[in-house]
Image (tube, rainbow, N blue to C red; front, side, top):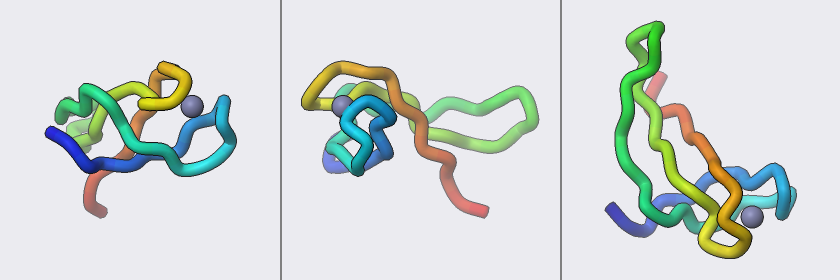
Length: 49
Ligand SMILES: [Zn+2]
């Protein structure tokens, strides 16, 4: 999956997400899990509502 963006807490801005994959959290919500393409910090993006 490519072209996803997420908020990187280290860069403190939106960055492209590398290795993004969809995961389902314990509460049943879906999220994307990946890492910042710039600095490698792990990032999450909650999907949908
Ligand atoms: Zn970053």
